[in-house]
Length: 86
Image (tube, rainbow, N blue to C red; front, top):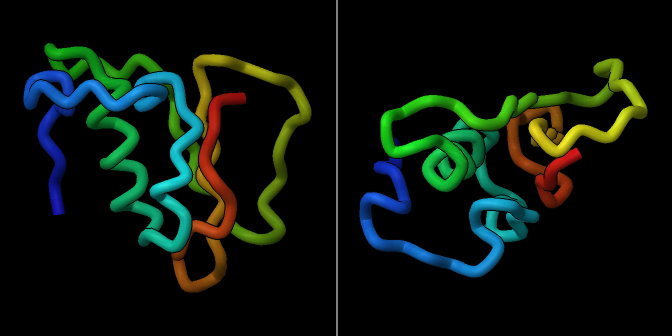
């Protein structure tokens, strides 16, 4: 399932570019990744944020970065926490 750039489709959902993305909760991880990219990638397709998919037990750093989005997924690859920058 692919998502075209949301800005190219004229979608201007408040908070969509900066997050958080509660609509991803329960979504398959890679669908959530593509959904967030549809809002955060530039119109030329350049990735403006790093998006990490994390599973139980994956190591994480405690630093806060506005150019990073973490997607926390369960062992079955479904989003279990609302993705946000940081």
